[in-house]
Length: 266
Image 1 (cartoon, one colour):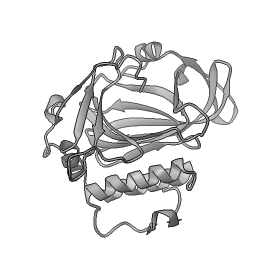
Image 2 (cartoon, rainbow, N blue to C red):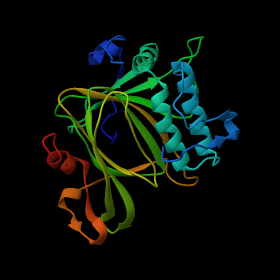
Image 3 (tube, rainbow, N blue to C red):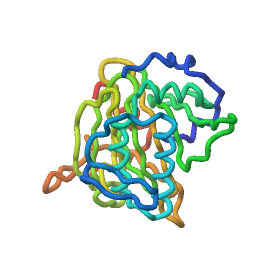
């Protein structure tokens, strides 16, 4: 998730990380109306899955609404979670296969390899969607270590394998530490989505379960006008101090130290 050392990139196709278009199997709010989007979001499960290109565009509508202040982060999160049930993973990945893919250099830590995705329009030009899209390809030893975020939201759709996902709410910050509370600890399989916002599940931790795994990520930064686009800080919840009501004072640590401690065996 930290990109300071990922400064060498090369174009890559799906084959560069072991994928082909046939290689894939297969919210908190009851309902709300996004009038600015000109669409009514039903609480019931959809009768028909969305076409991948429409799903990709809907993500852009939500991103623009969030950054424009027309919906709150929790509304964005609820809709992102709902949309996960409206897309066939195989169809989405076929659309990814028709996109412009830039594979980043391997990071110096045990983070997964990132590939940036630029979806293309009918003329072959990059679509302006208002969000960043990426694939994170995990070898069995790769881990996204526990870390918190500012000024951004993100969603992570499992498109290969499975993950143990652990989340925490970021309650407050102290000098050199975050006060956090555990919220979720579960196995996410293909088609399941994990999302984070400033208000809920702000801290996440991903470990592949049982082999290689991959997520398709939607990343929306710069949601706080006048602030940096994003800020990401690694923490050490296992080395933290237990407080009242299930809270933890978790020290902030460097990403290299986090990578050394938070291996796939943890």
